[in-house]
Image (cartoon, rainbow, N blue to C red):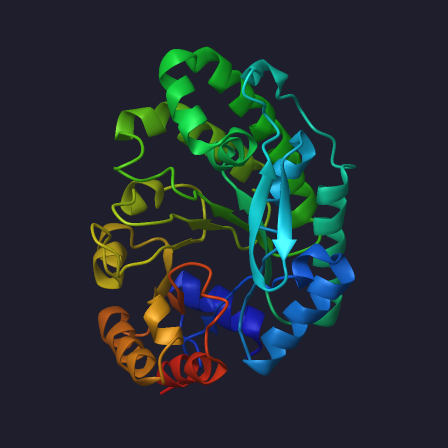
Length: 323
C-alpha cells in the first residue's frame, strides 16, 4: 500500500503492512526564502527518510504576519522577534478579519501546491495554529493572559476575527492537501488556562477553524506541552491527535487509546531519541509497539523535532517501528 493508504487505514484502526512513520522540523533559513525553496527542502527531507506523512512547516510565525508581527532570521538559528503586530497602546479591537490574499497566506498555499504535486501518494497536512496561539504571536502571551482577565470581551472579539480568518484558510488548504494540523501551542495546558477558561476562550474558536476543513480526509489536532488537555480535546472532530506522551502530566499512548478509542494517536518519540546515536529511538519505538499493538498509531516525534536532529537517529526510529 502507498503512504496515504497506510496512514488513513492505520489511524482508522484497520490492518496495515507496517506502522506509518513521520517527523517534521523547521528548516532555517529556507522557510524565509519563499515557497519554492521551502517546498523543495521539505520534499527532499521526506524522500530521504521515507516518511509516510508531510506536516508542512512554514515559518513558525507566518500566522501573525498578516497583523503586523515580524521576526528576524539569523542564519540557521531560531528567528527572533522584531515587533509584535499589536503595540503596547493598541487594543484588541484593532484585530480584524484578514483576506487570504495576504502574502503570508499566499506563500503557504503556494508551498502546499508544490509539495502536493511532488509527493502525490503521501498525505500532506497544512500547519494552522489555534486562535489563542495566533493572538499570542500578535501581542505576546503575557498580554493575552492579562487581557483575558481585564478585557475579556475585547479578547473574544479578536479571537472571533482570527477564527473566521483561519476557518477560511483551512478551507483553502483542504482544497489542496489532505487536511490541517491544528496546533494549540502552549494554551491547552493546565498551567496556562483552567479547563473552564479554555472552554470559553479556546474550544469554540478551535472548532470554528476545524469546521473550515470538515470535508478533509485527514485533520489532526496537536496538543502541545506537559500537563496538556490531551484527552479532553481529543474528542474534537478530528481523525487523530498528536501530542508528547513522554512529558509530565500527559497520557501515554495506551492510556490515550483507552480513553479516546475512536481517534488515531500520533507521537511516541522524545526529542532525545533524535539527538542520540539511535539507542533511545530503538527503545522508544519498541515501547510504542507494545503500548499500541501496532494499531491506530502513527509513530512520530512529540512535536516539531529539533533542528539538530541526527539523520541516523531518525532512520533508527523509523526502523524500530518497521519490525
